Amino acid sequence: MDNPIRRRSIKAGLPPGTLVYTGEKGKEHVRITVIDYDETHFQERELETIEECFPFRDTPTATWINIDGIHKGDIIESIGRHFGVHPLVLEDLMSTGQRPKMENYDDYVFIVLRMLTYHEQEDEIEDEQVSLIIGRNFVVSFQESEGDIFDPIRERIRNDGGRVRKMKADYLTYVLMDVIVDNYFAIVEKLGEKAESLEDEMLDHPMPATMHEVNLLRRKVIFLRKAIWPLREAISALQRGESSLFSDTTLLYFRDLHDHSIQLIDTIETLREIISDMLNLYLSSVSNRLNQIMKVLTIISTIFIPLTFIAGIYGMNFEFMPELKWRLGYPIILSVMFLIGISMLVSFKKRRWF
Image 1 (cartoon, helix red, strand yellow):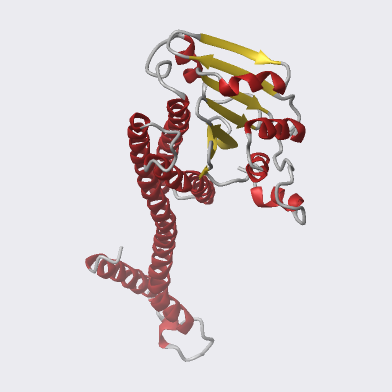
Image 2 (cartoon, rainbow, N blue to C red):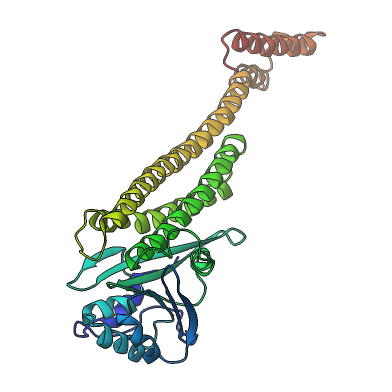
C-alpha cells in the first residue's frame, strides 16, 4: 500500500494529456497478448509489436487485448491513436493513482479498477491499477506488470465452457470486473478472521503489540474501502445503461454486480466498527487493569496507615512513656497492630472492595 499522492507530484506543471507514468513497476518489458473468440472460433497469441493488435479492432468476433506494462508512452500513444482514445484517457491510464471510475464516450467506455492481492505470509495488500477500454467488439485491458487474477477467465475461454464464448465484449467486461469484486470478498474475509483473532487476544492479554496490529488492520480496511466505495458508483452507472455498448442481457449481470459491491461496503463498514470497538476495548482494558493495580495498592496503603501511626508514636524518644517499662509492651503493641490489620482486611472483604 503506497502513497499515490507522492507519485503524482512529478506531473506538476505539465499540460493536460501529457503521458507520464507515475507508477513504480516500470522495469519489465511490455507484454501484449490477444484472445480472439466467438462461439465456434478461438485464437490466443502473444504479440511482438503493438501494431499487430490493430486489425482486431474491427473483427466481428470478441477480442480481449491485454497489455502488461504501461510505462512506455509511445505504446500507449499508438493505441490511443488507432483506437480513437482521448488524450486525457491515455493520461489516466499512465497515472496509476486513479480512483475507480467509469467514463462514457461516444464509441467506447473507459473503466478504472483497483486489483488487490492479499499476501497472507507478509500480511500485506498489493495494489495495482487495471484500466479497461471497451469498444463494440473489443476490450483492451492495461496492467502495470505481469501477473493477475484473470487466469480462471482465460481458462473458461480456452475450454469453450460457460456463457463467455457466446457473448460479446460487454459480457467480457462484466466477467473481468466480477473476478476483481470476488477477490475483494476473499480479502475482506481474511481481514475479518484477523479481526476476530485480535479481538480474542485483546480480551485475554491486551498488549501494546496487539494495539499496533489493530492499527495496521485499520489501515488495511480503510485502504480497501477507498478501492470499493467509488467502484459502486461506476457499476451503478453501467447497470443504468448509460452506454449503448452494453446489451440489456449484460446489464442484468451488472445489476447483480452492483448488489455485490453494496454487500462489500456493508461488510467493510461493519469491520470498521468492530476495529473501532477494539480500540475502545483496548483502552478500557488498560484502564481497568490500572484501576485494579491502584485498588490493590490503595488497600495496602490504607492498612498500613494506622500501623504507621502506631509505629510513629512509639518511635518518639520521650523518656516518660509508661509502655516503655512494660515487660509485655512490645508483644502487646505488635498484637494490636496485627489485629488492626486483620480487622481492616475483614471489613474490606465484607464491603466487597476486593
